[in-house]
Length: 177
Image 1: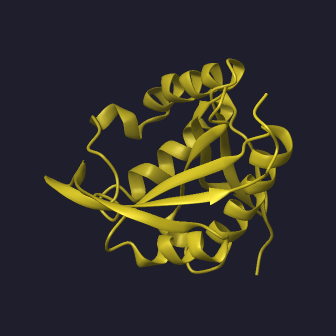
Image 2: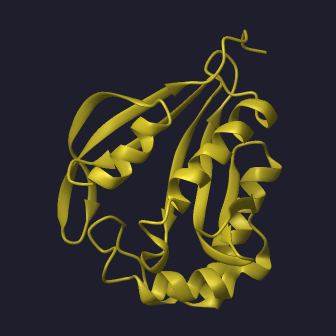
């Protein structure tokens, strides 16, 4: 088992992410929104990464990459951070198909949970999974997420509207600041 780490995304991650996304484009079509062909190139990833880092700079996100043996193998992001009385964010993640089934996704989620609580001081994280994505649901359950509902025809991917399970995890009991 190779070690897993996460770190803040960097502009230099564009080529690696483009390569992973391009290779897995068909395999992940069921789970990811349709994107223009340029998205799957280093040039297409540059503005995506720039936007993620701008959101991070504004305190609205923590965009990370999943790393194993020094190589980027996926992404893990806390986005849509709401402050005030909510103190919550939205968790999203993926690991390349070549690195699935090795525990990387679960370890990355565990690591980002620490960041959510200790660095971002969030009270709650939310996530969505498609009904059929049992592997992702297992990762969320392992890390203490509970399902709290189903949104019918919530997400459009691979030519169809998909139902999604909503997930939540309370992180801390700190008062909102």
